[in-house]
Image (tube, rainbow, N blue to C red; front, side, top):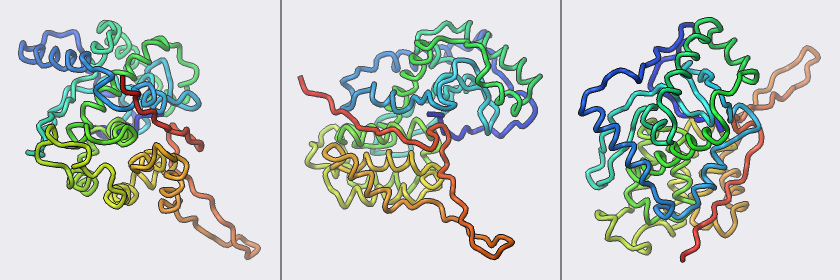
Length: 327
């Protein structure tokens, strides 16, 4: 699945993106921050979440379309280099303050170089890939470069792309806690749904004010002291309102098939009957309105709408989340 995160950079239609060099000397404070981010990501324990991390990775990976490319290629909007399952290769570390005084969990927004190192890959190889990408972009420009995606010689292995996907998924889980006060009290499928949203939208999820307000509305002031029963994770009406807030978003309208799969997972009853949960969302989240026009013979032709497939294509994989078995 292509990372659908809208980068905080302007589109670059013809000029190659400014590629940062990662081999220059950095201030001691910056290096310390980078080391801290790398260690935090590496310290992730599978037991930290209720769902199986492999399920999330399999959902985010999509080999059928432009979704698993082993050489750097340009983002269709920004022109910045992507690789693997949409891993952005040149993002700088970013400040992401925690605006919620009731959520003690900070956001983690390390640079691409930090994530690369956290995945256990050689930093020198990253710079080499970025240099080659810049040279190609200068010659091909974005449109021609994208036409050549399927002919590019691999620059990383399948296993390395999987490592990058894993570390990006872990970052998404880490930031999901920063977005939601009661993340730890959510069900396995709800945790996975929120992690997918963070992976796809990144910092742009902060713009979903109504969704974030609702998802935190029933959370206790001290999450760590709350029991599962004291949170709204089992309240159907509460979660219907949370789902509805996402259904009204432009994201849900542009990527309907993907949105149905993710929004359905917020249903407390999802684990019991995923198909019904998805049908309920699909019945409400209607396709884009089809336009009708008259042809020269006077009959009405219906124009089929595009559901905004991105990497997911016209088909959608089931996101059946397996809750972990307690030991």
